[in-house]
Amino acid sequence: MAFIDYYKILGVSKKATEAEIKKAYRKLARKYHPDLNPNDKVAEKKFKEINEAHEVLSNPENRIKYDQYGEHWQNAEAYEKAKQQQQHSRQYSSQGDFGGYTEEDFSGFFENMFGGASSRARGRQVKFRGQDFNAELQLDLKEVYTTHKRTLTVNNKNIRITIPAGVENGQVIKIKGHGGKGVNGGPNGDLYIQFSIVNHSNFKRDKHNLYTTIDLDLFKALLGGELMFDTFNGKVKLNVKPETQNGTKVKLKGKGFPKYKKEGQFGDLYITYKIKLPTNLTSEEKALIKQLQKLRS
Image (cartoon, rainbow, N blue to C red; front, top):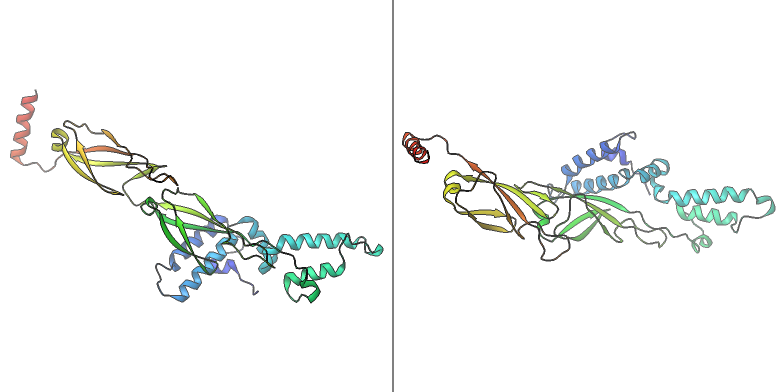
């Protein structure tokens, strides 16, 4: 396998901090994202390389292995273990005692790992579990209001996943068997996806409850009436009570955010009324307000 310089792909130095690596990854991922570069094979390839580099360098343990072993970093633990066993066995080589291993066993192990294995060595290849992959998926708050499917590109493969409604910001889910490929018939690793939820709406989310503020004109606040209001699930009619005060809070039960993996269950929506006073009053309007003032005094 040819050596891949993950630092060069992300445009950072080998001394880069975790924050610098994450910042570089996000910048490049946005630039080469398939949604922004449709039908661009070069951008698609670049996006895959960026994800692969981030998956390795964002994991402190994997980064250490990569720095030490390069393209063989996934087999670092097995390599170290075999090397220790080989060193230990050499202490007894004069007596012919290799602790159950022969020099041919160790020779075969390294040949299996790095290529050129003999037919005898191939018969006893060591199996290794594939690497776990980590990915970050950014979604808008409105997108996670409903369950939907999304296609991800991980390690040059497209993976179709179902994202349940109500996932939380920072939540991690595991996709079994979609990590790195196992070595010598070993099992594949797993894919861990962390969700980054951005909010461009007028709602503030707190777990499964939603909070928002609605402007209310003075006349509706005084006289009451109906008000149509947009939610993630369509329009809702609000019945404003007469003489509603500024800062009044109302709760709409079951109109909040869906509860994660609880079909049909929702939180509540809390609305705060903010009364907007009229501006640019005409002389006639001012006179009428003065009349009202006299009536109230």
